[in-house]
Amino acid sequence: MRRSAALALGLALGLLSTGLASAEDTRFDVQSFRPLGAPRDLVLVSQSRPLSNLSLSGGAYLNFSLDPLVLVAAGTHSKTVSVVGNRLQLDVMAYVGFTDWVELGVDMPLVLAQGSDNLEAIGTEGYVQSFTPGDLHLMGKVALPGLLRRGDMTPGLGAALTFGLSLPTGIQDAFASDGSVTWSPGLVVDYRTERGILLSLNAGAWMRPERQFAGVQWGNAATFGFGAEVPIIRGTVTAVGLLSGSTPLDKFPDSTRQIPAELLLGLRWYSSTGLTFTVGGGGGCGCSLTAPTLRMFTSVIWVPAKTREYEMLERFKDPPEPPVPPPPPVDPDGDSVIGEGDRCPTLAGPVENGGCPDTDRDGDAVVDRLDRCPDHFMGPRGHDGCPLARVEGNKIIILDQVHFATDQDVILPESFPILEEVADELLNHLEIQRVLVEAHTDARANDAYNFDLSRRRASSVMNFLLDSGIAMERLCSAGFGRSRPVAANDSESNMALNRRVEFTILPPAEGGLTPLCPTDPAAEYMQPQSKPSKGRKQAPESSKAATDVR
Image (tube, rainbow, N blue to C red; front, side, top):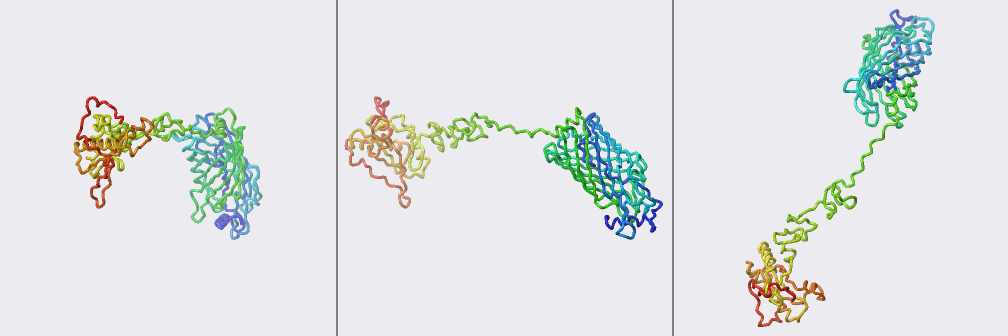
């Protein structure tokens, strides 16, 4: 049994118990395979873009269908009547485009061969006529304004209106004609993706005369189609798939609605000669008397060279390579630092800072890469980003040495700003309980002399700080002579490093008490005739400009 029980109504209403057909039965065109002849149409499903201006296409479709019209005998599920058991049909067609907006076409179907059972059961002795012409089809397509894809591979949405007109050139008794003019308006909406995949949806109507056959009402029908084309081999081979069908708008109250729909799959080859070959197959859904069990088809469509459509097909077969993104700029931030040498390739910065923007953590307008003290505000009298004095760890660091008159404890005026900033640091950091003022000398002269000179110089600096407002209990002084060198005393530059004044912050005593001053190591060398300078003792005029070489 080839049809479902729903189709068993076949002769129940259409045949008499003796096998004679009802006098009302009228034959009609059973062919639902109505191919399209433009090279990019999807067999039965149209795409929206018309052929290019004055471009031609022509070719043929050959299709074979099995059981396009089979009836089930009334009261039995074992016997069928193959009204049209098989059909081999050739469609010869030609199309032309105008102004890129309009496409016109013609299709002449020829039934090359078809077979059937003896049709005595439906009122005609003998078999269906084997060779017969079909109804001549005239087709038109008009793109909708704003929805015309100019290039066949142009991605985006497209839409068009279609119109078909069939003239009764076929033989109705051979089920190859409706016996009158039919027409079919429609709408096409499609979309092509960036990767070249085409999706198309068709909807419309098939306006045909009312017919009754085997208890089924045939006449005006709604048509539908959905198709897709997917590239397989770049620009040469694609896969085509579609679902196409129709359904009558009217039916008898007790009859099943007919939906002659077919699912078809195929492969398409775009050759280099302007010929497009398509081959495929599929079958019906089993939900109509006219849905074939099997269909196979093949086609060849030719587009002449030297036409715009041919050129468009050539571009489709050899689409341009995707644009290669330009290489990243050698210097994206434009700071003239390139390659691996630019530690900040997206931020402009000077070459000296590795291409990174300069920073200034302490906000003293000296960039960190040039700031010797990047975490200390320089102040108005500092230089190289450092203040003249700053608290760092257990020391008050001074930017320059404290200079004295030669062999004396007299502070030179050029060192006053440094000591003033030391006093400011002590006033700003009241948490510092006591500072030891240390004085050191180089290795020239003996220990007694150096200890005495360093003790007096330390005392002179402490007196300067006392005069600057620092409380006595926060200060003490000691001279260390040459006992704590920071460099070898083998050159004038090294000895200048050893002649220095340091400020050491003493740690708090146990219980948070004020730390005690350490024993002055110079005490045993103190000379009674030496008196420490007090306050801001000025150097004699003759020594004010002297350099401390002792």
